[in-house]
Image 1 (cartoon, rainbow over the protein chains, first blue to last red):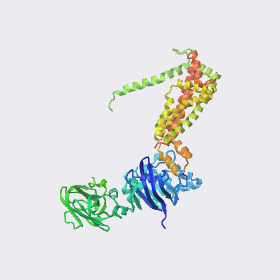
Image 2 (cartoon, helix red, strand yellow):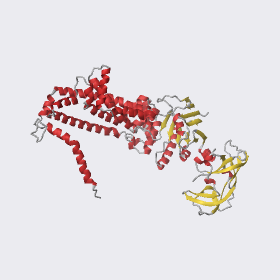
Image 3 (cartoon, chains in turn red, blue):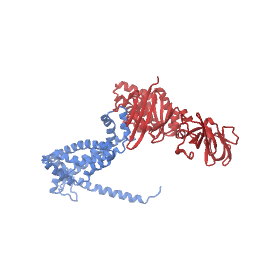
Image 4 (tube, rainbow over the protein chains, first blue to last red):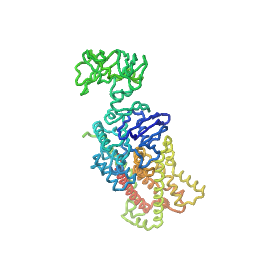
Length: 366
Length: 264
């Protein structure tokens, strides 16, 4: 039987007249790395802080490790938080910072020392013990914050955009470090970020949030391959979103009319639009082929090359088709030139037909 | 290097300002070693007689002792109350925090004379016997706003998530204050204590209205002045300058040490 470390049911949080979290329900399996993903203001940090007991929900229930959250603190709470700015105690040395939680648990001195040393070994901090936080680099401070939380052996570790303050290279490095760490300690990580790449890299599952709601919860590949909405498709990875109207629906297959022809695709989940309903057709740039036709694909159209961007591994081509722009990623250097007439196309299996969302009307701005 | 025409001007200006600040103090020190009883040039000769006279004056000893008692008590009460008030306003003030803070600072703007009269009226109303206790209470009223001001200024830079982190790690409210908030405030505590001490130690006006028969050092000096500025007064002044200079130096040094651990 699956064990759930975090269970949220109908959780609501308001700040004045603003509803930050609007009735979300979520279960997190034990030992998993789960990421709450969304832009700022989507309620992800508030949700994390409620799981950590730092905010009290206005409605719904939260259970951690099977127990309802107790409103009062104490050293035996099942969660520990890693704060965005680390929140290290500036007047304490690295060792004192890490030992703080153990002191609060009133462990004997010998055990504190032993556990702190274990943590230092695990995180490669051994040479920093006597230093103060301001003497450390961002990455080192990050490690100290992780050590300080993990040393108390929580059931669930909560991480609030912990890599946000690091530069790109350090961030990539720490991502791998975090993955390794989570595997080694084997506890549940609940992670908050607005960085979709970070979420894809780290997570067993991703919870995409929007305006206080959960819009989709699934594995990174599910979220990427089968987004349930234009919002998800646009937030995770790149997406061409074309306004269309439904012509026919058969099971999970649908055909829709766009301004440059009929496009066939798949419907996500239980979305079954009526004939004539406005929808958005979604195709990822890497699924769009460009070049001199014919391409022998399920859908083919013709347009002109409007922009070519060489990104190293791929070239991103913007193809102008009437009033719309379709972006295509082709491997390596693109053979065509600006203003060339070109064919483009894709296979129907890569097309998703998603509910209409006015935020994505008019294609994707670039 | 480029020649800067403003540089000599600024240098001269700086010297002038320093002269303006320190010449009177220097003159006082100079005359305290002067053989003549009249503070006038030319200097007659070097003597330590005024200092000897000073050390033999038992009334002065008592006044100094009283001043120290008042100043130390004022520092203890004022700092404790002020730090608590500043933290309270910072944490629970919410949208009234700014107004509360400004309001608690207003006694600083009220002239000492008015504070003194107000205190005397207040004490009379409750038929309080004037003593060093009433002086201490008066000095606390006078110094408390400074402590709140200094502590509030430090708290502006306080990262609330540090307290949250301590709570998260299992610390209770009192432990959080003692182990996280207070160490962060240490430089402010030192500065506030120093400020209260100096304010209290040389206060004449408020003391004048709130004391009974007990004399403090500034009151004593004030009363000695009725017979003109004697070399004896000059020597007390010189000692006070030296003492407060040393005091400020020690405080500055400990302030720096306290800040090393808490700058981020």
